[in-house]
Image 1 (cartoon, rainbow, N blue to C red):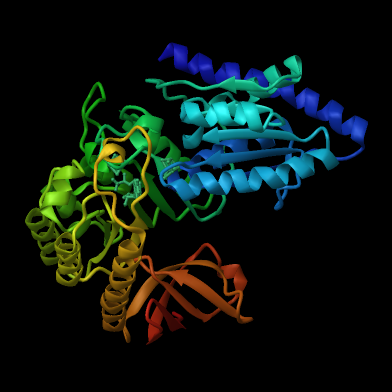
Image 2 (image 1 turned 180 degrees about the horizontal axis):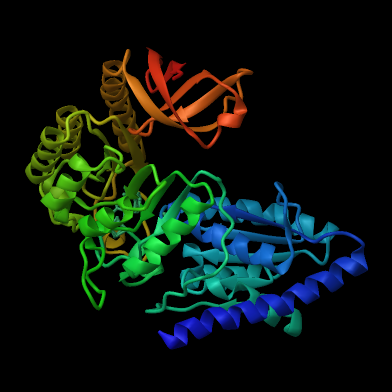
Length: 470
Ligand code: SAH
Ligand code: SF4
Ligand code: F3S
């Protein structure tokens, strides 16, 4: 513990040192130095980017909206191949920017950098990159910048794994009224298609007192809604010195005064406890929205995916939740075209979609990730077959979500007002407990507050509403 305290103070010392360097540079240039962080991937990465920005701003960089900045960081994702392609596309552009602004610094970090073949490619084909780091050492940004300034060559610092959690570093939140809070890092599940366990390392939970301290802090700064983040929140707390379950953690977070809403991502269907369902059913703050990734409806494929549940178990769990929490909204993740997926397997997936009646789903075409067990499975499915299945799945999801959307028309719902509606002046956009959006009249001073809104008209996957004053 002592050692970790030291790590964060060590990093603050580097930040102080680099602050002087930034001041000197801006003196020479006669302007402020600017920075930008481009984020690919999931909410873990979004959260990490807020930490990176926190460090950059502490050092004295000023955030700008465009990638044309003095320090540009790409926080990368590698969950599917198209995430990788995206990065290389951006890097092509960046090369030209750097020719225009030679003192521009380029940093690459995140999940993709944990893969050796990526590092090799960048070393050989993208020599203009300045700093490369991974998922385990983002807290070192100031130290790495110092190393780069001192050495004048590319700095590469990738850790294979870590058991370290460095607390108390700066963070610059994207929204003033909602934010993600890490409760754990890494994943031990090794679903056979998934690269995340290889690039995010083994599961480690943050201590409840550190989590509560952060939640209290952000609430005191105006946050109304927190999203508790982990690759499988159901295994929260198992590795702590004093083990604690996720349901118990939720009860503790609920006690934070001033906090209005709690969301979480992601629970795994294999170990979702009755206690968690109970907390969700009785809590005033935990949103009645369950994002429960199913991946496939075929028990045969679920076994090959190493998911540890069957179609029947998934459906039974969903029904149990729907019975205990009336009106709960259900969303999921589905992969189409896992190796060996037959028409029969796919129909099982459609079957579950119909039976559970999802409010919405993230649907993905299977992407082969090298190093995962599924990558060497035979029978990779034909592209045209996948396309056809994907379209059929989307059509069915459109039906189930529209059906659910209709049910709420006429209801009065409490919403968190998130932004002005860009399409129409004088209109605001609020988020319902079930994660859908409603547009209604209001003034922009209300952004970041809660309001009661009557859902007047449904538009398939969002609503038009009227604010209820009083
Ligand atoms: N830990 C979370 C999800 C992490 S990744 C969970 O277990 O649900 C988010 C989603 O990406 C997964 O749910 C899965 O649907 C999808 N995904 C992961 N690997 C993939 C791959 N190789 N191809 C296509 N989709 C993938
Ligand atoms: Fe990937 Fe499975 Fe871990 Fe989710 S639980 S991150 S899908 S290995
Ligand atoms: Fe997230 Fe992509 Fe990494 S989905 S954990 S940023 S591989």
